[in-house]
Length: 457
Image 1 (cartoon, helix red, strand yellow):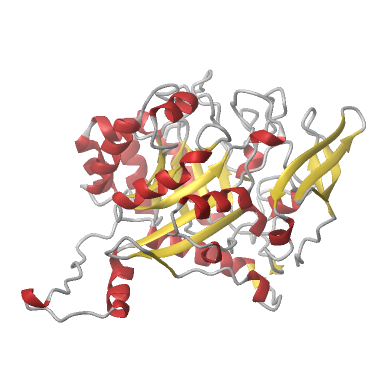
Image 2: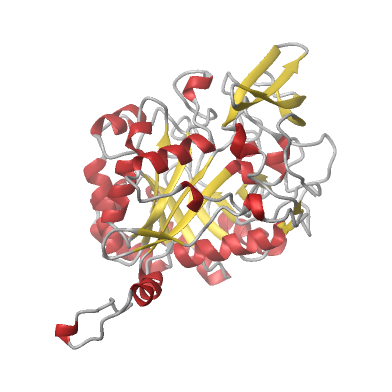
């Protein structure tokens, strides 16, 4: 059982220089929480992980773990070296990432996969089928994200999607930069016919300079075209900005307003403050980091009153310190009516079930991240012969057609890795040899770019 994390508490982490497992402390300083650890060989490291001590203590609640029913590995060296999942992991798989290529049609300055750098051959369809079957055997049907690299560079992507649907996976999403979706309007129709549910679209801002800094070229017209082509083919779109201080943290409100202009085809925005693993420009200082409370404050401050802080709540699937979410209904006049609320500090500390959290998260994504086609619009104009609806009736009807979510997730790198959080991870990457490895462990690299798992299996 996981209790409230006190302001000063102990955990485990790794050395950013050699990735050795180290004891670590969460310590309070200047109204922020820092992770402090000392490597006997490489010295002490202290990194900000949470800005806002007032929010920290009550953000989470006790949780009953959901250990793997069929672990893939044994506990020998301890976390994070036994991933597979090992018997000590405390959460089931909500989303499984299948990396179907390491090739890419961009060369971004920021890339957790370090894609397009000496990419190995793509896994063949038989290997991918084995991954699907492993997921069914170990976990049952979960939500699947096809990732990479850039999955759309594979000509057999429709076959991969179709295979997953035939095997029983009800929600399949692609993680994409959107370039091929923008260039070929018929491509979205092909993917939709194969069974694609949703597009997780790289979308870092509404200004050309932002894309230049993070992706190497201005890409906003291509992003808009990709959204429009998905909308025309009933594919739900999630905008995914990587937030980097000094690059696009000023643009959070404009990203939200852009998303709302394209709702309900755009189902929401999922902010990811930059994490320093894979490929990134410089070794980070604290000024180069945004924590979960930082992102929430930016959302509230830049939304022009659309979003209140009380509507943003911790996640119920992953460790609460990893994420936030807000669920809304978009009203005809542009208001966002929240149907989520932060009740963590008034929950009475009753333990929550990790298994229930995973099940609810899987169901929410599969229901709300897809396009909602063939739904009759609300009509409340008496002159057209329809009854006048009160706001409650409009809200109920819009809840069927115009839900919208705002969320954020802070992935952990070698400086910020907290092994308590890692053991609660519900986003698992399928490794080439068929093991399930928590996302932050799979992508973990030391300060010199050497990986713990990626490229070594």
